[in-house]
Amino acid sequence: MTETLETVSPVDGSVYAERPLATRDQIAAALERAGAAQAAWKQVPMAERAAICRRMVDAFVARTDAIAEEISWQMGRPVSQTPGEVRGFEERARHMIDIAADALADIPVEPKDGFTRFIRREPLGVVLIVAPWNYPYLTSVNSVVPAILAGNAVILRHSGQTPLCAERYAECFAEAGLPEGVFQFLHMRHADTEDLIRHPGIDFVAFTGSVPGGHAIQQAAAERFIGVGLELGGKDPAYVRADADVGHAVENLVDGAFFNSGQSCCGIERIYVHGDVYDDFVGGFQALTRQYRLGSPLEPATTLGPLVKASAAEFVRSQIADAVAAGARPLIEPKDFPADAPGTAYMAPQALVDVDHGMRVMTEESFGPVVGLMKVSGDDEAVALMNDSVFGLTASIWTRDADAALALGDRVETGTWFMNRCDYLDPALAWTGVKDSGRGCTLSQVGYEALTRPKSFHLRTAL
Image (cartoon, helix red, strand yellow):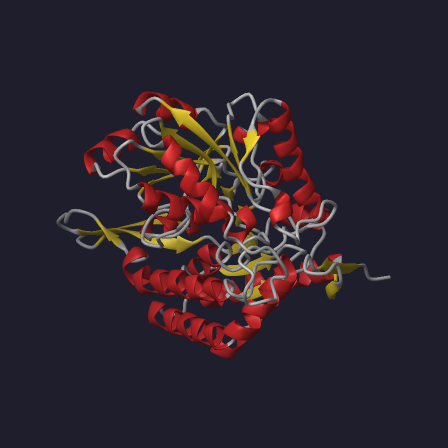
């Protein structure tokens, strides 16, 4: 009997989608198709690959309304915000398409009489992409489009919470004229995914998800000499200096902490504020947070939707309770958010003061609508606290002094360093993390390096 995947919507607890899980025979057949298709696809000229990918993006954007509503039902983000994921998808995809020809061009070396020498970027083969639910398109597009542009075939295994996203990719690629087998998706069990990673037909794995998930992926791949790209957790810090524009910092850091109900790997989870501006910042942060409207993500007025599951909300509530028991003070009354309901996925935002690094909420990834605000005496203390983490995805500083921002950025252990901005991916820059936030890189010209291998051509032309 075929096993079935059920996607339970956080909106109302209903089963939103049901899909059969792939059998072992279906997985083997998909892998065989991918290998055969890739051998032909890598011979297709770059201009044609790019044209197909552009048509795919066009087809995707044309489905904006339907895609946006599906995201809300599958993972709970408000419908007022989900169209932004389509816009972000388009921005990243078009950027990677536009730079592909240069990024993947042959690399010349210095001339040498009697020889032709260059380095070619060879596609790896079949790329397995394991994508998460929190930003189901923005995380996956970072690898899907560049992998195909580079001449690889792709098998996408999307989260069981957002299975329709994989199907939308397939629809759009088919409409764009991508040859059959170059892109495929599989709804799979975890065990079958790990077995697929061990198969010699897979040449690279791109994974976005939790730290435990990353360990499982790496362990499965360790039996083989293949590359693995891992974008894992975060506990991203911000530092508000004494010379910051406090209003600007408040506006952006509240959004950075609570957008997508805090379910972002690069969301703001801890904020260090210089004592000179601490009171002003805390007051502004509290006032702006109170303006959120928690409710059904299908209502246009909602600005804060449910977490993806009730269990995720309970985890965040436990962090808050532990912190309060240890002396932290909450700034927000959950009763001011009528939709807040313990035992459900609907949870009010929370900001905590009087926190320290002995509390889980300041060291353990929350992935929910909570943030700790901590007073610091200056730059050195802020840098030490920002670095006091097993994670290092992004970090931000809020200051009017660009020179100071650059100098402090050199001292902070992070993949991306922001000044007066946070919770954003610029596709022209490398998206990468350090420590338990993972390894490898997507986006930018550098992102193509993991999806290709260098192949040297050394031709003696004069005998």
